[in-house]
Amino acid sequence: MIITDKAEIINRIKAIQMTKKRVIVAIDGRCAAGKTTLSNELATELNASLFHMDDFFLQPHMRSPERLGTPGENVDHERFLNEVLKPLSEGSDVILYRPFNCKTVTLEDGIEIKVKDISIIEGAYSLHPDLFPYYDLRFFMDISEEEQMARILKRNGSDGAEVFRNKWIPLEEAYFNTLQIRDKCDIAIKL
Image (cartoon, rainbow, N blue to C red; front, side):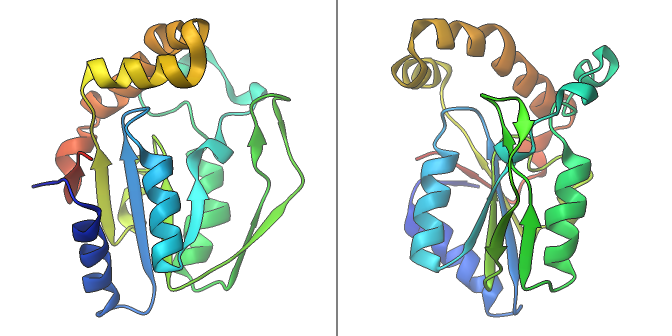
């Protein structure tokens, strides 16, 4: 099923919320598809906690050729699982973690996020197989190749677009295809 309307996404989340006190939602998908924008909007409209996979980028000491050569392994899913998903699923009221800063290539000071009835996890690799079972609802955001590159060019400039074209997009596509991420999602989104 492909959803093209944000109201339908909200209805799906609220339907699960009627059966559970806490709901954990993942929004994975292609870069520049609008995951962050949609997640910010949903967090505001649903009064949800929001967590970003970009905060769990691999630290330099973890970037081995073996790990980077394995689809889905260029994010610190182990730390995300231990610091965010397990505490969320165990009923923690506050999540404390140290976001990774891509500019300084270091972990920042810890941040504290108050857990609300709905938690949204957004970003590529949020549906890594080790994380998949913790979600109540799994979305995959799609975008055409042409629109994707147009958005990346506008957002990141021509040099940045080349990095995405030659590095990040192939890594994501290997993850999506090898692990069949889109096929395993509950719903695909194309806004």
